[in-house]
Image 1 (tube, one colour):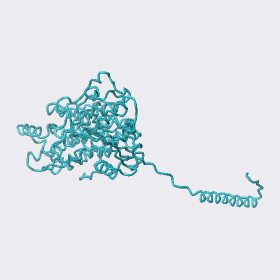
Image 2: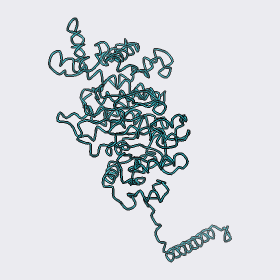
Image 3: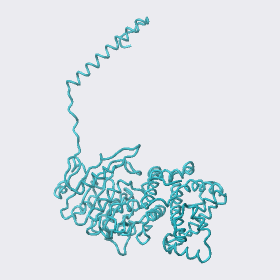
Image 4: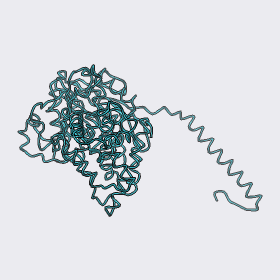
Length: 525
């Protein structure tokens, strides 16, 4: 298959799972398709370089590179392995490349156990940095088939379709975007479970552009997402940073992320590698953000904090947390059945004094009373809440409720809050709403200008916030009411009179028809 454009590449990858799609849910086959996509990427990328390293020339295709690789032996093989490990952090032997497996599938000698061993070799490389990376690729699962032969056949069918795609012809962004396309497709099919791993790209763009604003040319940047999911929200920042003189913007950004779900944590690790983020710039952890603070070693504060936590989640809310420096300044703890403010305060605690934080939460955090009202009041008194952006309903896969983005800063001495009501700024596609690039631009430009826009945005002073008793419900500050058009009663009555006259004329016509047919009818029958 020749070079595909981006959309064709996305569709070809998605079509690779057609056989799986017939017998299992997206939540199940997600791990297999993403795992194979990731492995083929690693294999193709390395295989393409083998001939270049050995013979100082690029191969015509993967089959040629595979042939050259299989002829290497002895001391030359040891030297090549060392060189590949130095360059990539792993070395896939010739018998375990994706291309080799494809040939064995055609020869009917492919075994899933060999694929499992190939995965294990990668997991044990780079000093254990990739440990557990393929844990969720279960080759013994009955989801793949009731017998080893059927499971072997299912994976073989996917690999045969995927083999036609040569990943070496695509740049970092294209492959990373293709991976995120697959993640988005899984999110669309998985419904509620999608909230565990994916934030729509348009929302990620809004938050990332706001965090990047004024920092585009920084030599180094630290980003933190305590509920990082697949890492797509965390990675979005790189698209809005100025490229260095070497054209590389990834090496200047350190990514810190924590994720409680082990499957999703591995997804984030693969996503980082597909975007070619160097291992030394990846700082991901599998853990519970609220119950166990992290990071606690340097650095503990970051230039940007971005979050899309699970909404209104239950948490322990142990009284001892009132002594925790993340929550202690706010007098109360977030309610046990609504951890929204607990996530917000955790992220805010890890924000630098001159940093920017963006978090997606349901609208209830803007106006609910009790402990949440107390926490909100403290944040406003400190000037911590900088802006609130109301998003359209129906743009998230895991919920139809309207959400908002809250922007927080630690240096907002005026204590003003900028409100944007973007709830009507969307395009509908099937059952899903989404923000277009124009919608995103409008939000970001309004945020930068920080000036009133009729029926769209308002800069509320701290005095105005106090007068509203620290209630941040957006309609209190942005009036989007559209008056009903004036009704011309005279014209309305004239129309009604005409309708009634038309009905009488129709009745007379029908009576004439009935008379011609010899039928005698009475009015009203």
